[in-house]
Length: 81
Length: 161
Image (cartoon, rainbow over all chains, first blue to last red; front, top):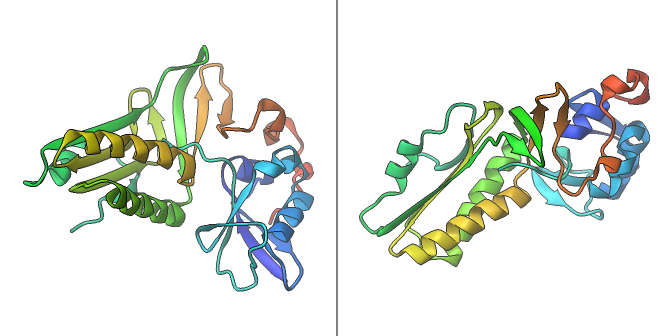
């Protein structure tokens, strides 16, 4: 299935886009989205283990399913404040 | 009552925040402002650009508000984070809390800004005086930050719509 992942900050910069469509297995979890994202944007590889994900605007762990998600986002380390 | 924890693209109105948290039950009001600093590790900043994931950031601000009220006997809480381009000295974030006594107000204010900086999906981009720009990602050393696309042909990103 295809999922759309919102991108921010360095991830958006590396992709040159605010979102990206990725192909993942039908029973995909967040870890699959991470793998697909890194395959699509190799420039992100050095930051891979620091990238978190949000499913429906809530932090989600690697095992969280994404099939029912309305929105998925890649969350690089935050720097607000 | 209007939401007191929110994002804005306007100048943060500190007088308004103080008015909102200053209520009859309060005997202590603490206001923290984070402002745009000129020097970071010897490098000179011209401006900062703040970007957020608005839906999630506002949800996280509301969660921080609720958690602070659970931990301390607070009267009111107001959290505001600004997005967009900010010049030196501008306030990027404001935390205002009130409580009957000062200990809770100081402790809650400190916890709120510390936790906000760790959890709320907002990012800042440095605009350095030397003309370069750089997204700030704590924990990502220079060796972990992907190169700016301007230094890389666009084809290396691949897959982007």
